Amino acid sequence: MPSLSLNIPVISDDTLLSISDTSDIPTLNANLLIGIPGFNSGVQIPNLTKGFSLNLTACHLNLSQSCTIRPVIPDGIYSIRMESTYQNVTYNVWYNHLKTSSFLKLYYEKLNLINLNELDKTFLSEMYEIKTLLDAAISQVEYTNDAAKGMSIYNYALTKLNLIT
Image (cartoon, rainbow, N blue to C red; front, side):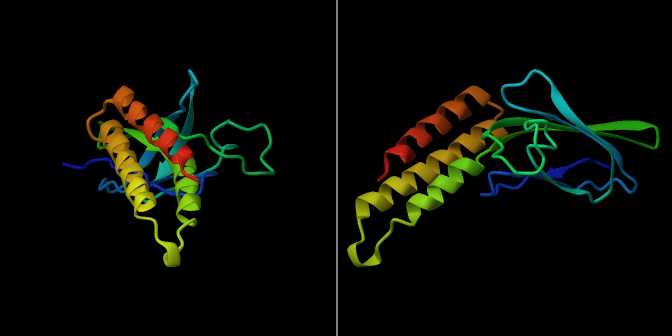
């Protein structure tokens, strides 16, 4: 039986939301609806064809009035739904995606503090714990569909990350 699927990679570019089609439906004419955290309405992207690959900016998501610059797309839970009809059957797929790009950008900036000549095991341990907490937050949102628990873990990890100097 044909199915719809998407790839929504974790990226450290905080100005993009990347989404690509990985469906096995032979001919795809899909509509994508993206729910944005903190907003009541979403963005619809119609008439997507098989194998599409999107790198969406804040402008595409109606988060910015200006499309000449690429502002940060905020971290949070994005509800992404794709629908397509094939051979008179409607297929749907729905994902909750915890966008963590700004978190990762800060995480990588903190990792740049590593000095191999004066390796601080406490720093490494704290960074490992923070990354594990981030992975747990993603797991809660994307695999167990517990958005509240996922965001609670995310916020705790972000607080710990902000304390690293």
